[in-house]
Image 1: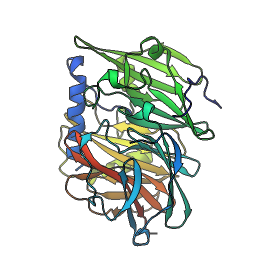
Image 2 (image 1 turned 60 degrees about the horizontal axis):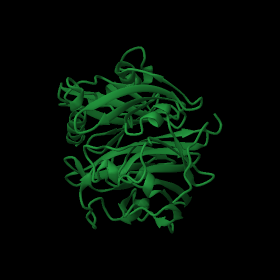
Image 3 (image 1 turned 90 degrees about the vertical axis):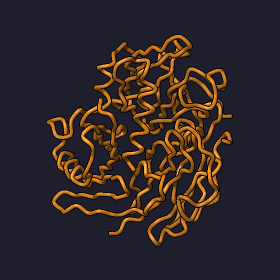
Image 4 (image 1 turned 135 degrees about the horizontal axis):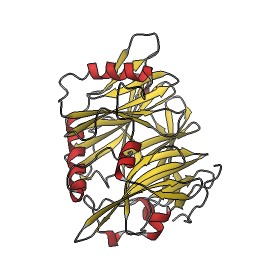
Length: 390
């Protein structure tokens, strides 16, 4: 196991949870799980330490697409998403799958749920190099939600989901952690423990809304056999300062509550409208959320048409120096540059029960996370490397 320590000042100076409950706060975990299932329906073993695999040849990259499946937490090249071996289904909260991605320099880091970080580099055309920074005591039985580049390091939000898990709280090897920083220079992890968590280690940071790389809003939850309670704080990681907050402030921190208002950049407004036009038949009770990732900003931006609807459709968007890409349901990627007509690239069709979940642009390729969904469970999962045409 890596040497672990609590980290103080970070060197250098929801996924926020987009699902809000209505009515009885004690029902929030159930409503959140149900809403995530609705999203899936609409969107139609860890070795400690860092190890490097042999360069995995991206067979088929010349043809435009290469598949990699997570097998025992390691990315292995496969012929298709549904290629064997099958993976025993497990709750999405603990299954091995890619939950977020972020760049540090030219290295892409994937959050591999329940394991840690997988770093992806390329040393030659058509060849990817994977290195793994895994730590069982930290990551197993926890849900990783968000990666945030911070001053050359990578901050990770994770939490223990008591509703959908494969162990009881007493089975955790480590308790009272929600923020972990990966230090690439040391290939090590360090804890960042807000004061609220230090005083209340039995509470979990189930909600995380980053405002910047230094400032975060938390939704804390305490559950026992008799009650469920929630609390809210805002934490400045660079100053190690924390203040009490409330649910309204937390919800506001989740993102801009509009797709067309003055708080939405003009190019985004037009692009969101273009995306909406390509989603015919979207039920009126479904909220449309856009999650915008840019390598120029450490924190992703959220724009949402509503929060309290019956279901939520999340559309992932990339802002690449003004050129916008959207991962639409059904495996289409919409591209739009200023002054040009939009273009659509069709990703390889997925088998029934599989879906694309997130993506980034790396050079002339897209790296797209995918997984096999079964209600609240996930089976096989991995990434697709898809070469864009000029």
